[in-house]
Amino acid sequence: MTLRRIILIDDSEAVHRLVRARLAGEPVEIRAARDGQTGMALIREWPPDLILLDAELPSGNAADFCRALRSDPATLHIPVLLLVGAAALGQKPVGLEAGVFDFVAKPLDSTELRARVRAGLRMKFLMELLQKKARIDSLTGLWNREFLQQRLQEEQSLAQRTGRPLACILIDLKGLDAINQRCGYAWGDQALRAVADCIQRHTRSEDILCRVGGDEFALLLPNTSQSGANALAKRLLESVSHLTLNGPEGVIRLGATVGVGAVDSATGSSPVEAAIQALLRSKADPRRNAVAQCA
Image 1 (cartoon, rainbow, N blue to C red):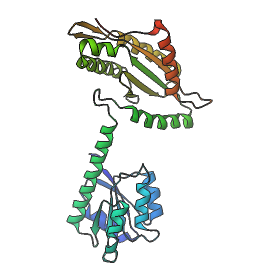
Image 2: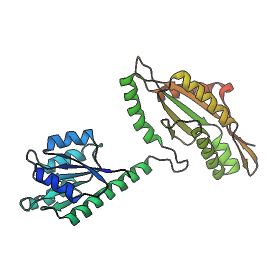
Image 3: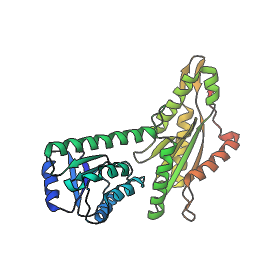
């Protein structure tokens, strides 16, 4: 079982020991900080699933701390449980406005703490699920354009820091409109799913396959050179050209046009932009156009 991460920010070592005792047996890993600055650094270094935050920070303001979390996309969706003592009860409205998920009263009751922590972790899980679904193409089950843009930034930054190659293959399915018009949209959808499955059979676990348009797929290839991507693109084009579906009017034959690009180590240019230019050149060359058709 994967342990969920909790960061506790409170200046009292006694509270640290008490929280660990109260949550003993829960599937969580707890790390603690004594002040807001140290806590924020820990959050950056070890992104948690839940934050337990003392309402009376020894330095800084708990509401300001929460606002800082909500202003950063990396920490925006981390639930915060505010630990509130009798002297800080008036901070509840301020905490809610600052984005606090819930409150836990001090002294900490074991049953209440466990219940509120579980609720916070459920909320985080549901947010992660919604975020994931928002980045998945519903037809093919592949990642979508939004996810590609996110991962491209991450992979390109990594490639520039490490000097490792990064390549991209764009695959444009040809003749999808003709299949939709002659055979029906259900068959066009089947054609897209068949192409997605075909490409997936050629990918590694670290490769990032996305559907980025109606009939276009993108394959981001970490640690792959231009020559390696070229060789894979040829195999993909051949495999897609051998795909067939038994449609209502006969055999549906599939095909595609591909473009390959890689990171330019001198300029750090985007491999996707390079692949787009290569795809345009391929489309301009009739010999490279393998057209899908509904025969």
